[in-house]
Length: 339
Length: 296
Image (cartoon, each protein chain N blue to C red):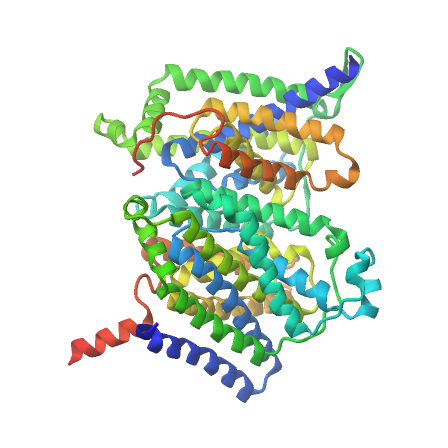
């Protein structure tokens, strides 16, 4: 961890800077954008923790975000609201009304437990088989969320979550996530996992238990996703299962890929760039819709631009903007060469 | 007896469509060991071509031919945009670019056409029904079965008897060796994408014939079906993909007839859990493919 203190400080500084800027400007819209950015950071860092260290693409991340969001919702929606929000809820859960902060923590643990159980046998797989099973896992989680009406209100919108996430809480959790991802990267598990990423056979030959290591990373990643999902739930206060499917997976993935999946710096920088681009393009879509340039509403422009950016980055710089070294290491190296 | 005939026709027609979908996915996978996430969008392209030509007054068969050609072109475009530039760099990169390309096509349809379902012209033949042994069945089910049989036969002929087919099988078995013996890599890969697009185009026509409309997200279900079928049948084997397609249709149809309404909602969760289980039990699938060769 020592070698990453500079990196942690810079990345945490970026988050603090974003919060300060939005507070000083005092525009409510910026407040919302920065909160969203911090929540995305938690999710992207979780995905980076698994993908960056193990080298395996995972589509299931969003599913665990959903698990977290729904867990926290069920535990924290006020008891008198539950009759309306979740009419078919099991009796033993009807009276439960925890503080949202406690339920966010439980949501993270719940997502991690679900991940631990379902992913244990999957971690033996590599390459395309691993990707297809993670895709299958996303579909399974989505189908369950859409149809388990008792807990999720089915495909309909679930409402009534207490608003608990503000800009400071989300920024605090985002900074913790940065530090957590860096600690994991330098842990024994993280280092061994990266050896298996670079050469699976050589790693196995020196006695690395690859499935067990991948499993640990996957569970920690799900913990991040669950907490991120719960934070988001208490920020947006009403959502439906659609929020945890392919479109959102694409956005999170674009943040990670454009920044660079192998480094924490890349994850953070990618999240900042994509969030800014996303909000800018959404604004542009809004303007075009107001101006009624065409008869039809303008939708999909944002995704088209993001997809093109993703393809371009992968062609020109397959590792993303920060392919191998963290920002702290890059700066230190530059200082040393100057001396 | 009537029920048995009904059941068999349902399984065969669904299985025929599933088998073609799976074949289109696995022909690319067999050579490159890479999954094409933009495969479903080839079906979408065929559907929207039909929609755009619906007012042109051309005979239906001409429109259908144009739609299939567009799907072939979209398949080749997938190769050039998402696969060729990053193929040599990393597996993950290609999976992500093909996922991005799929999002790109879907959102282009959203932006330039419409998010609402669009009606696709269908010949009257598709909506007629016939009675076989007491079972009433839509004629399009029989058309699907016939199309699947003809295409599978043609495909088998192509793979076994022509130079292109033999070269493609060689490339799927050992890509490096095939290249050393003078098989042009890029041509083979582009041909695989073209065939994949052709199969997707034909399946798209049959698939959209069931629903009658096309929406930007139409490709997801065929993609999932192709995934499941290829995983069940064996990711590396062409015959495995066909078997997997029919097996999946058998499972789906059986579940449709036996599960109660409450559980039927979870059908996708059941089938996908099955995929996970099969991958664990036999990561290679039911039918083993040729021995592994190196990817380029």
